[in-house]
Image 1 (cartoon, rainbow, N blue to C red):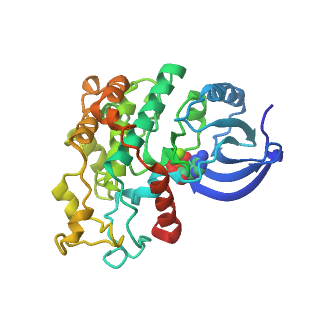
Image 2: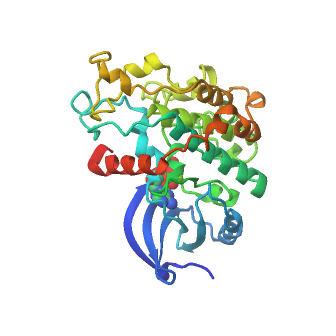
Image 3: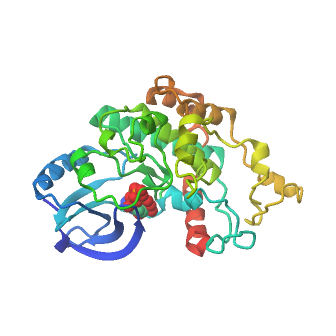
Length: 352
Ligand code: ATP
Ligand code: MG
């Protein structure tokens, strides 16, 4: 059967993106809590059925690494898309500072708007490994089982739940839908691979090329960049500024690819794991250094293989899954449940 609006009880808003809002809803007939995404469309009724048909592929996207799809429907000029509710929300909300901002807490920050009161709970190598492994399995599933690429891999599209599961959402199965979305606002953090940026129009809007000029290896770049952002807690490229709106895109195309932070680099911005407080001055106390996050050489190498600027040399999913870093997942008995619980507590206390 098909889901429709009359069956849904609207609950709180879960988040807001560039193209619409996501609300928690209760599906009355089944008593299932769902997340409902509203996407405003540029009205073109001839496309509606095409979109619904294309979205139908989502019913086949059944994997423990992909957020479950329950159904979609239209009301007026919006498509509503119902999916599994992930009670931990996105990894971006759990461990990334917004908009590539310098992550100073309000007391040290020069910008008054900062909402940060403490640092998120530290993420260890084995947590990052589990996240990377889940994302890679999800992307590999989309490619081999459904024959689609994701096209929008980024930390806001990686969701977690209290069971410690990590799943991907918001992949681009519908070219028709993509063409109809009313784009009001373009994100200020690009996860596009260099070849996608180069193949796009000078305005930075790549929509004309979105379904032609790049391949699945572009998702591998976005995967690597997301892992770097999750590890660092911030987007690794400079923000676009009023003076230089192309600063970020040029850095992606012409600059050196980012990687996991070096240990020395971490010391400058390290979190004291004992008190959860933040220190901007490194080497202040000796125990502070114990909280230093060190990424394994395997982790660094894995990320490096995703972030190769030449698309042809980038690792494939098969290679990434066979990599020594991925092999360590499973032996390490990683406790994602506790990390997710701590991260949610931090966020809900107002960390973010
Ligand atoms: P963009 O619009 O650039 O894609 P986005 O991914 O943040 O950015 P949305 O996809 O609209 O935008 O999602 C908004 C927020 O809603 C997400 O960041 C996430 O925190 C939350 N969210 C999305 N889907 C779910 C879900 N299935 N369960 C729980 N929270 C969700
Ligand atoms: Mg999203």
